[in-house]
Length: 115
Image (tube, rainbow, N blue to C red; front, top):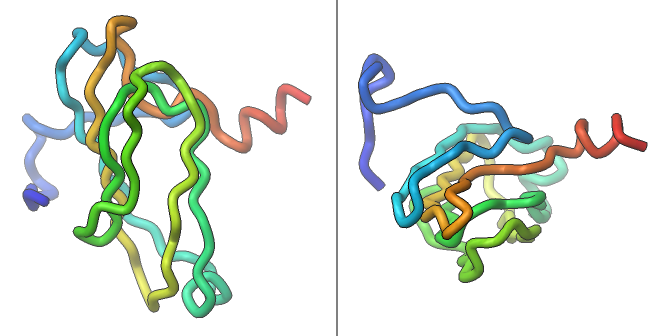
C-alpha cells in the first residue's frame, strides 16, 4: 500500500500488458494502475479478467486485497470489481516462479488480433 511519488524515476518502470517481464525467480514485483470504470460498472459492479497472469501473488483494489493466485504458472484470474463511484487503483503484487516471469501475458486486444 506504499504510495510512491509520480516523480520517482528510480522505482517505477514502464511495462506493456501482454508482454511478461523477465524477473529473477523468487523476486517480488509490484504493478499498479489507475482506471475509471464505465458509469454502469460504477453503479452495479463487475469483474476484472486478468489473462495469462504470470507469477503467484495478490491483487489489491483500492487498498483492499480482493484475490490471490497461488500458482506461479501463467493462468487467468477473475477479480471482483465492487460498485463504487470514480477512479479506482489496482495493484498486483507478484512473485516470479521458477520460469522467472511476472505480469500479464495476454490482453483482450491481443486475443482479438490472433483470431
